[in-house]
Image (tube, rainbow, N blue to C red):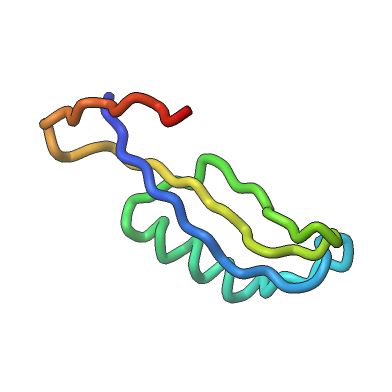
Length: 77
């Protein structure tokens, strides 16, 4: 099976240890992607140097509907 991928970022406030993430807004965003056929396969936080949360990064996949297979570009050094 062929897959297509999508990366989404969401601003996060505070420190993760305090749980200061808008759970309702984040759930609504995840459900919106799920409603379009995207499956969440990974997520991770990015942080500022002082430990504060900066972004939540979500990586999604879904079955590819376009039969054309694009060439894979070489990774940048």
